[in-house]
Amino acid sequence: MVAVKAHQAQAFLKSPDPRYSAYLIFGGDAGLVSERAAGIAKAIAANDTPPGEIVRLDEIDIEADPDKLSVELLTIPMFGGRKIVRVETSRRVTTNMLKPLLDGHALAGVLIVEAGNLKKDDALRLAFEKAPNAAAVACYADDGRDLDAVISDVLQPLRLTITPGARQMLVSRLGADRVMSRGEIEKLALYAQGQGQITEDDVEAVVGDAAELTIDRIVNASALGDGAAAVTELQRALHAGESAQGIINAVQRHFTRLHRLRAAVDGGKSIEQTIGEMRPPIHFKQKDALAAQLRTWRAEALDAALAGIATAARAARVSSALEDLLVERLVLTLSRLARPAR
Image (cartoon, rainbow, N blue to C red; front, side, top):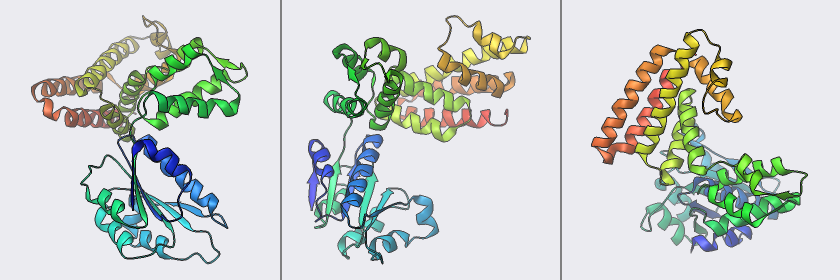
């Protein structure tokens, strides 16, 4: 029966209290929520004798067997070691499903629920805050101090140091999503492995601006027909404060360039030659993705894509209240257009 503030979350989850058998980890930073849920699951499993078993259930599992969650949590393992069950809230995993587990039973296992932003009066949050065996743990986007800690957490075990200037540059380029930030730091550490110290030149070479990187991922996923990835990256960008109209503009610029490059290929140039002649030249890391897109898209499909983008841009300017919905619909439409051309 506890509500853990965001600044207390890391310390609270590092040493799980045996009084609690249910945890709600919630907040707008999906990466941080996931990382902390994974961390407490591992800590609980390690503290059990014999070690506990971590089980992840998704919406498909629950849809196939609505009783699976309660069975996993209420069944006493034959050979000891509790089940630690991780789930995310969804249309199947709801307050109505979870509340009876908090109210009516002593759980044999441990329940860890991951959720997005929840208001103070949200029914699920209140259920965990009031239940005697449960804790609700708030997780909010990383600030500079949090990112400093993540940088040290990644670099110290590898015996890597980082200059003050490089650290400052790195923090400025990382976004609010913990998992994405950790991934960028790990990529930088791999790049600098063996040289002892990371410099500003290393950061410049490896880590792009977080907002630009996220928008690039939206654009590339859409252009390669991966609608699910495009929507995931889009939600990250919108949550981080990116403008829907700005994202539409970036998509429009990319597809206009793709149309121009496709015309050059249709005129007889190879894809490699066309990309090599681009001015200004693109980064080598982008070349493979762009080549794949040129192999995917034909001129007629690009004409349709540009028409759809223009329509979405006009609609977003007229009705800013709907711009988030419009940009999501746009990236899904582009993803569908990409598939038949493959």
